[in-house]
Length: 115
Image (cartoon, rainbow, N blue to C red; front, side, top):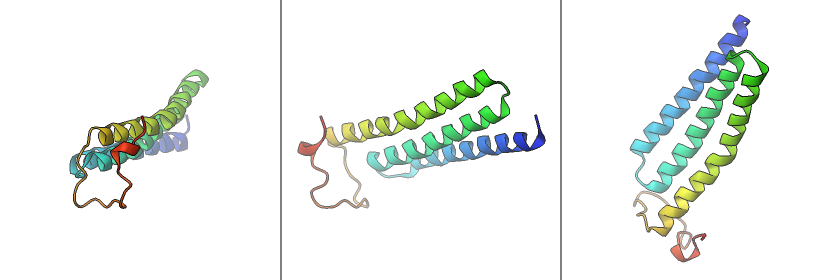
């Protein structure tokens, strides 16, 4: 493997790890479940995809690359759905919205929550 590919792969893995760490900080620091779910789904999904792409660059072989790319694609499709489900469940369970969060009048109505 060339040195350039190794550096690119390690850079992807490091950036992915950094995004996952940012998602973890968001999970601890953000005030309510809606903001936490948003931070974790975006940062962790993109972070894991970068780690998987970095592993695909670092690991030689067609089979490993295909498996890692399929895992990255599945991650991009399933994480937004899971984040939406967490938000909808929080809405249905009447999870409190933090006072500092901004919401347009009438947009958070439990009766309009998807079932």
